[in-house]
Amino acid sequence: MRFSNVLASLAIANSALASPFPPPNDSPDSLYKSMLAAGKQFMGTALTLRNSSEEDAIIKSDFNGFTPENAMKWESTEPSRNNFTFNDADRYAAYAKQNKLQVHCHTLVWHSQLPLWVSNGGFDNQTLIGIMENHIKTLMTRYKSVCTRWDVVNEALNEDGTYRPSVFYNTIGEAFLPIAFRLANKYRGKAELFYNDYNLEYNQNKTAGAARIVELIKSYGVRIDGVGYQAHLASEITPTASSVTPDQATLEAALRHTADLGVKVAYTEIDVRMNTLATPEKLQVQADAFERVAKSCIAVKKCIGMTVWGISDKYSWIPGVFTGEGAALLWDENYQKKPAYFGFLKGIKSKRH
Picture 1 (cartoon, helix red, strand yellow):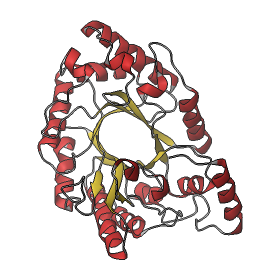
Picture 2 (cartoon, rainbow, N blue to C red):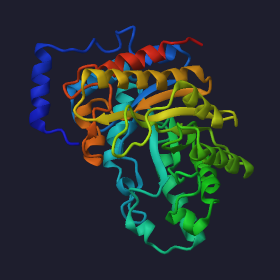
Picture 3 (cartoon, one colour):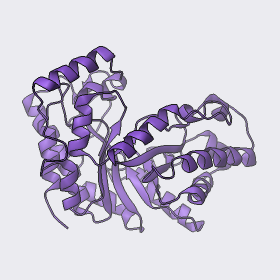
């Protein structure tokens, strides 16, 4: 997921000749304008800054927010104890301010992309809580004017809804969740605080586990604002996906499972992968899946927005992790809108609140 200076130069030169994109913010059917018209708060994308004129044009046309893909994770911001590195994250903060974009900041407490000094440190309960507070305080204070939302805890559940082993759970127990949210509330400013996880969309045991997390945090008298449904989905059975994107009724029921507990919900990392190569028929099935996802958010009042996990298939994380799978996003490798884009837009425009 790197964008060379050569490619960037070619892209800028080519865009001067002909651009497939509408002028920034001028399309009445842009994704984010349609989301706002539907009574929602945001339409976001995962972002890795590449000095790409194509991606900049798409962001200005179709999105009013983004999630930094890696820049705010623990290994990127505190690689050694109390040694904070902000150069990368600061670039995203500056980009957001320059373009007046919401930022879904990601993520404070997560078992993955965690430096070894935390995961293998052998800290006792109180020391680890102190380390958590120092990390949370430092990031939330620095980006208080930038972050619209924070993923406070990410992916704390196994598929069966039980807690995933991690240094935080193994050391502190389930109380690490309300403790993390209590600390985040202490430094939150105006940011909304979310729990975020994948495979919640099927309304099964893991969804019930997320609901229990909401109830647990609230039982401690601690505020949690929302639950993020990552929505890393598939349009067909693949070697790594045993289920396809659920039907709309299931998607809506899954969202309501936690929303009915008095929190907001959002789709936070949407992509819909397939076995490559893509065919017209497979692209249409994918478009239908994107449409269902969008319709479910529009239908659930407490669903405040959606984020797709990237712009173009050119830089999707899927092929690098799931061999032989991909084509998971709304724009193809040449930054052309796919049927998925139009299916997604159709779903967004399915109902107005």
